Length: 515
Image (cartoon, rainbow, N blue to C red; front, top):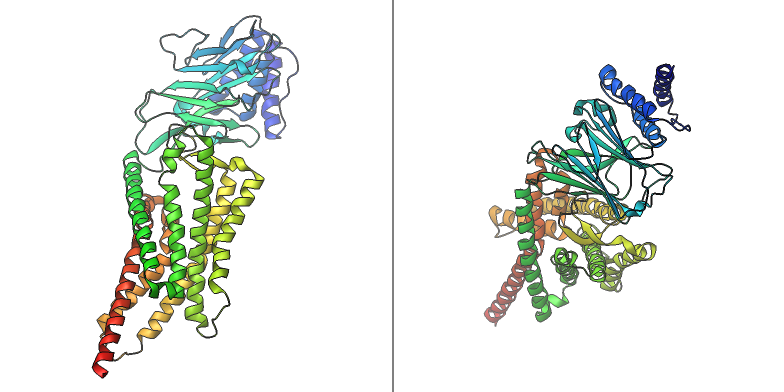
């Protein structure tokens, strides 16, 4: 009779899942009932090559409703469960488990998983703590979207009658890595969201360094957790090299940009040139960007949250200001090459400054007003709290809209302006100029296009090509060119000074000859 009842329940679970109906079990179950249902779920692996989400969720509810008076261990072929009803409050509770065994506060030889539960769970005498571990070949999790689930292991945690989320004291699940992980992969801690039927990293940190034999998942809620192997964005060696290239390039650019501003201040003729005054605003924006980017990682490593918030806010503002002045460089080129005539604008530089420095200030102010907590310490690898951190924007939506979205608009506009410049250079190149050879004209045209490319920030668009087989080469080119953008502006500025000096010298020689 009991087997018929549970066979019917098992069939009902499969039907309810196909109809997207939640399994509900309201009656208290005995240990034998729970064991029988575990066997039925385990039989699903043999008969159907995998587990259904509804069956696992229903198993969790069956275990929660199972009445126990002491710590109870139950197991089937591929499932291990431990039920514990605390008799008194605790500050910490540790569960050790292997594929076939689970014990409370006692380790054993072949234990591969340990779970540390905090006292913040606030479990009472009428609550049951449920630990359930499922181990199955990785191929049996394909319907869950997790064919790369490490060792096919899923660890479930729940408390009867309580929905545990937002813990300040995190739940730590430590797993022994018995299989090697190659350089192209990295493990990440994720939980299965039964609502969206997908794995997610939200609320979980991955505590692991390469070559370590254990990984710890530190999460702020209870549910089913697993370690998924994902493709590493960059091998550790390339990451270190790219970081070094960026730091050296940005440091060199910062020094060169400061020299550029000093040269601008000390040269009266250049100060009078409107285009140069536009360029110097972009130079100042890049100085601010490098000045706040370079120490950001060091500041994030310190305990001062206030300083990190300032650094994140200033970095966001200077990045937006850089994008704004890149766009204004494009607008200035539009006036010079497209409008040509009637381009006088009253208080032109003042209006450009209001846009170039004002719009970023408005965006940053709105972010602060809406949520000041947006700025702060952000891990470069969001799934790994051992990774390097910088002071920047923690909210992904804000980051995408206010930086990636703004850059896409600026990049699209400046690509059009670059096309206009190319067209103008080609049309002028078709006109023969007296005393100028083809090679001299070609050099001049190439220099013009390189200068415009740098000022418009076209090289920032290389990030769009950093995917697939081009990921690592694309990132190397991106880091080299963009970290040295300020140095390239300095070189162009020096060449402009030299050109102005030669023009002045030629003018004086001509006047002396005429006299």
